[in-house]
Image (cartoon, rainbow, N blue to C red; front, side, top):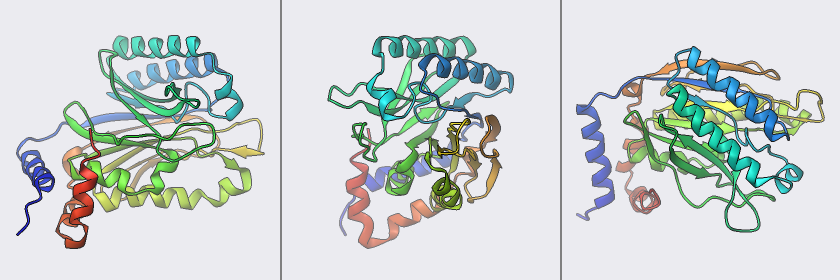
Length: 292
C-alpha cells in the first residue's frame, strides 16, 4: 500500500489535538463602512479595537481593505508613506490593548499592482501572518500562498471575500489542523445584485463551516451608506462547526458582534473523512504542499 507522508502528518496532528484541549477564543467582528479616506478608516478601526477590548474580546476582525479603502481610484492614489504609518499605529494599538487584530488593507507587492491583504497582528503588535486574496481583481495582484497560523495555540486559517467560492482554500488548512476560519470581506455589488446575492453569500459561508466542521467568523464591510448605487450590505456572521449561524448583524448599518468560539467543538469530521476517499488522496497530498 502506498505511503502518504503529508496525510500521515495530518492524522498525527489530529491525534495530538485530541490529547491537548484547545482554549476558548472570544472574537469580535466589526462591521464598518469602508471609506476612500485612509484617516477616516484608521479612526474607525481605532474605535473598533477599543470597543472590542471593552467587550472582553481576545481577537478583533475588520473587513477587507478596512484600512486602505477598496475602489480602484482609491488604491491607485494611495499615499504609501501614510499607509505604512497607519499600519504601525495599528500595531501599537494591538500591543497597548493586548488583543489580536486582523484587518484588511492594500499592501505593496513589488509589482505594478498591490496585494489585497489580510494582516494579523499579535498581542505584542508584531505581524503574525499576511495573507493575500487569491481571487484575481483588475487593480490587485492575486495572492500566492494559503494561510495557516496559531492564535493562542489554536490552529487557524483565513480567506478574503471572493476566495470563499473556492472551497479548497479552506479545506487544505483544515486538513493540517485549522479549527477556525476567519473571513474578511467587502461584498460590494450594484445594489439590486447585492440584494439578490444575500442568500448566496450566506449559503457559501455556512457550507465552508459545515463541510469542514470548523468555526467561521466574518467581518464584512458595509456601505457606502450614502448611496444605493452599489453597496456591501454587511450581515457579518459567526457560524459554528455544524453550519449553524450563531450570530448575524443586520444589513446596511455598522455594528459589532462578539462570541466565544470553542475550538474543541471543531472536530473537522467531514474534512478528515475526505482523506479516506481514495481518488482524492493525491489531490490533498499535493494541496498540503502549498501550506507554509
